[in-house]
Image (cartoon, rainbow, N blue to C red):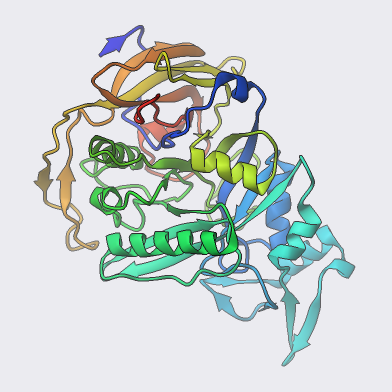
Length: 447
């Protein structure tokens, strides 16, 4: 391992998620003609279990400089007529209160909020995606992309998957195993995209949720599945250091898939936001204005659904919880990945180039699940430390790495010494600092 200098400001353990690979290696001249767009690929409204009316949720992101969002409520695409009873029905644990309705009316005006009374209960109609799109889409400034979080279960395990850029609600398909469930739903999205002439994808969401439910082999065995969340705002924190982090899981999957000649998984940073306003989440001391969930920065020639989706399918994006890149280039001829941070005054950075060598040790060591009897028992597996190892560290705001002949891939993680204000307890060390993650590069043979 080459090491230019040690990161003197913070010490962190090996890390959270990154975004997977850019299979299409874009020319530098084309890159120069493109722009970066900030977006959130996973969010919720009170169509299901989000604590905000659809307009409130979309406005929340628009007010904070996002340029696109993917609405991804559970098992529904926002079409048709849907009414929520105030202080009445509970949907996925959510009851819409009169206080929430008053806030909604105050923000968007009484004339724009449709209500009715049924059996002495006040009801409010939720806006459809088409209505929201008409209200919020602004050419070159803000874009809404339709989506759905497909929520499936197999015996003893759960899997949530985001279907992005869809034309109608996608029914969940539950196979005999979790791997089969991923495969069937990925195939369904591909068929849906073909039928409607769309650029679409299916992503495996928060893979450590509920309790290490997604195993590496579940995604390794599904090469058609090209996206997975590797950063997510979920408050759950793994209870035992022997289990993989989301980042380690991502490196395991890509190492096996790439060495076997299959394409890499593209990693996603997401917000998965359910809570938008003070008091929504019962954790004291939360400053919602400063909470740093994660998002993606997509490089595209313009802000349209087709170009954003194509860039994502090409893997031309990175993930961030607060670090912004001024430059991200991969030169396929020189096999060199270069990054440069847009620095914040008073903040230090370390760039880590991470990957796996060819011929890595594929064996695993098993261990007893430490939560056996308290949680669903899982098969504990320890993978080689050489999977996702640090090839080089550079203290500073700019660095590059040239891929060696025995490298399967390389990706960059850029970590700052600025603390992440996420309030969730028991965070791993790497979650405590604002970070950016690039895609892995060099895994596809350049011509």
